[in-house]
Image 1 (cartoon, helix red, strand yellow):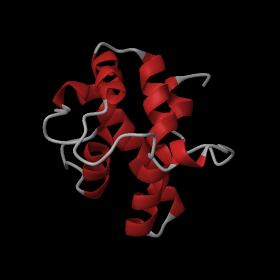
Image 2 (cartoon, one colour):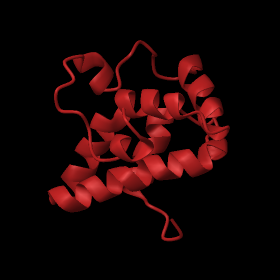
Image 3 (cartoon, one colour):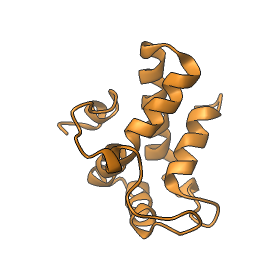
Length: 116
């Protein structure tokens, strides 16, 4: 990724790793994904590489949900950008005791805060 902004322009449709793109990377329901917890902590201290890793892991499911809800490509891309910007600015709000990082991102996608 050449910049943070490039990371927020929409999912990379050339990603051949379907398991990563779908968010299915080995954790089971109810399990804490320590990699996600670590990435969220790193994002909270402004680690761009951590944001890139989360974006690569979860942009496709975030995009898919937004697209299903909005049925408009341009607005979908804007929502994906907003979700990952919120992650960047509010990663410290993620609580792994309440759920997985993907669940948190999808909740933000489905119920965006009007303050963002």
